[in-house]
Image 1: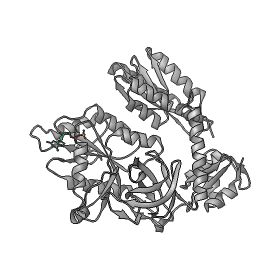
Image 2 (image 1 turned 90 degrees about the horizontal axis):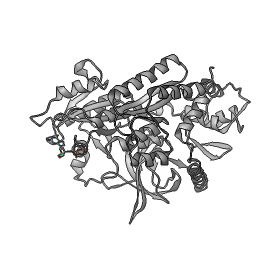
Image 3 (image 1 turned 180 degrees about the vertical axis):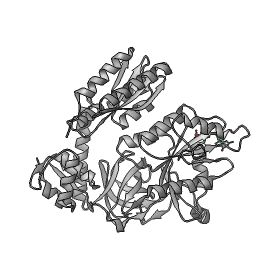
Image 4 (image 1 turned 90 degrees about the vertical axis):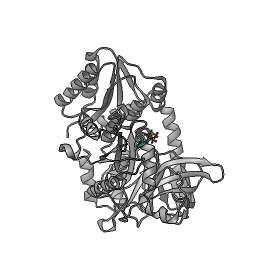
Amino acid sequence: EVITVGDLANRMAERGADVIKTLMRMGVMATITQTIDADTAELVVQELGHRPIRVSEADVEIGVGGGQDRAEDMVPRAPVVTVMGHVDHGKTSLLDALRKTDVASREAGGITQHIGAYQVQLESGSRITFIDTPGHAAFTEMRARGANVTDVVILVVAADDGVMPQTAEAIKHAKAAKVPIIVAINKCDLPAAKPDRVRNELLQHDLVVEALGGDVLDVEVSAKTGLNLDRLEESIILQAEILELKANPGRTAEGVVVEAKLDKGRGPVATVLVKRGTLKVGDIVVAGSEWGRVRALVNDRGATVPQAEPATPVEVLGLNGVPLAGEDMVVVETEAKAREVTEYRQRKKREAEAAKQGRGSLEQMFKQIQAGEAKELPIVIKGDVQGSVEAIAGALEKLTAENTEVKVRVLMSGVGAITESDITLANASKGLVVGFNVRANPQARDMAKRDAVEIRYYSIIYDIIDDVKQMLTGMLAPSL
Ligand code: GDP
């Protein structure tokens, strides 16, 4: 018990009543003078849109400039887009082609730098930010670290090949992250292109495009000839308008690391996407468990810039170590504070590594469910034949219906061995992987061990149902 509700409200510059209301929503009844523990405080801080920085076990500090942004300070920002799809369907080609549509660099004749993300400016003046690492592995791994940077997913489907296994996987990943999808039906320059077939195949994955009465936008494109790239970009802008993407640029910056490396000449370099505020040269930043004073900012055209606004990708120079992709970046007031936070985080990291043996993300999920913070048990199902996989998914979903408090959420079900992609997906949602008459491949096994993701093998369907039932009933959330 470390902080009173009143003190916490003061530190966040929030009204006490709002903090109490938030606590109530979490199932905690407290008055303004009552004390709550650090874990609860951290949740409240997040819930109210602030960024908690825990400087010690016993204290929760609010990041510099923390606080909710006022509506009048919010200005529209560029959408952040990730491209996903089956191998060879043209993700890389499409990213390259879209990059060339940037009017700003056309004028400047700049040399493109691959820094992990880039931004294009359209004729209309609108901007779109693209994450330069295609595929759902990067997407899901970032999400596993708590970074939800992607606003829109472009699903690339080759019109001559149709929906393939990785297309289906990408759909599951995007849906699990609740990110809207725009379909780019690629390679429409080919005579063998059958875009209508693609639309129909997508139906089977609950992706209903407008032409078939749904609300998913789709565009027939060619990364090769440049066909309809402008329409694809317009669709992204349209989707962005629906999402009402806004950020307050007039505050100290917070962002996410999308890529980081150790550069021979320049030292640690992290590509950061600013989420809110404006990042400036000279700022003291904490990125993951590294910190530094920003020595220079370099944009996606290789030019040094004095500052970076929301949704603008920049390379940050001056960190004393290499953070991980997906880790957060926040500006702090003093070097002392930066040191304090990173030392704390590095210690936490070491402790987490040590604790990982045996207890993993699933256990965290159990704890959350027990604490009434989570109401779902996410599961990835892999099996040897489609029929049994469907039977298992169906039966588990029935458990959901019988049990209104904690539900099973089938993240993905499919045929084949358990792969790394299944582990990443389960890990991102703190879930469990079930294998029915299939095993995990060695890479997936290693990854599961590293990330402490639980894999359970079965050969009898009833055993799965029984086990999951027990999990659900053994950890029923207390009713409020
Ligand atoms: P990725 O694996 O999804 O990144 O796919 P790539 O971008 O590497 O493309 C795979 C192959 O498809 C390459 O040989 C590309 O040249 C080709 N390709 C990509 N887009 C198109 C397109 O619009 N039309 C045609 N005809 N070929 C394309």
